[in-house]
Amino acid sequence: MSEFTSEQVDSERLVQSPNWSGANQAAGEPLGSGWLSQVRAIQLDALSSQTIFLREVWSCLAAGVWRVAAHFCTDDRFYFVLATHAEQASCSRDVDVREMEMLRRTLLGERQKVVAFDLARSQSTVNGRLGACLGAMGFDRRASRTPALLVAAAAAAENMTLLQHARFTFIDEQGRNPAHRIVSAPRLDGCLHTLVSAIELQVAKLFVDGQSYKTIAARRGTSPRTIANQLSSVFRKAGISGRPELLVYLATHFQPKAML
Image (cartoon, rainbow, N blue to C red; front, side):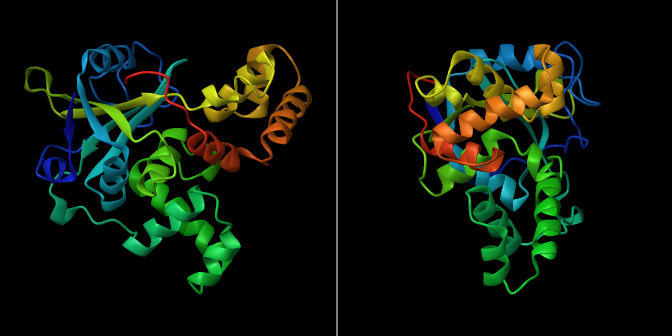
């Protein structure tokens, strides 16, 4: 497999994708206002023999070289669809390097109170700027919706996970604009198989995917209270509390099974 480096991706100058929100897009429909569907993205990704360091994905997102046009997941993998910023000079971002570092620290489990103290800022200011950083990357500004793959990329940047590589696909079918890149990696929740029950694992996977208690309950034909109890059991067995800690736990306990 060939690997891409930051020097290669930095040299790309392609048209920026619109600000898509493809996390809940129907599989056969275009992702946002683009032409690429989830089904097509998955098919093209499966054919790829190229890889990229996950730390490079983090670096390019943090630096604004790439922006997430859509993200979604399957039972086996997490996916980012990425586009570059068009005309870098005219695309200003209301975040700086220190704030992206603040985001990385928070994603990897540091408490906002500690980060705020280090930066001599209020907690409310830090919380607002974290949302701005996520938005600048192309994600939902709510930290509760942070994709697991972003946490894995942040962990890879600090060498905190065994998931160091992701599959990489460059797409420019028949000269269509915008051209895209697909980054995909195995799901992280395999490490829970021996720790929780089968039902708890199913619920945890939906929770990792960013679904609310209410949505999970509706899908499983049960009550939000039952889902809350099942997730509490998962948290207790893993020695954690809440979704942010769960994502860090999954990234740092990831055990690769096979090739990408």
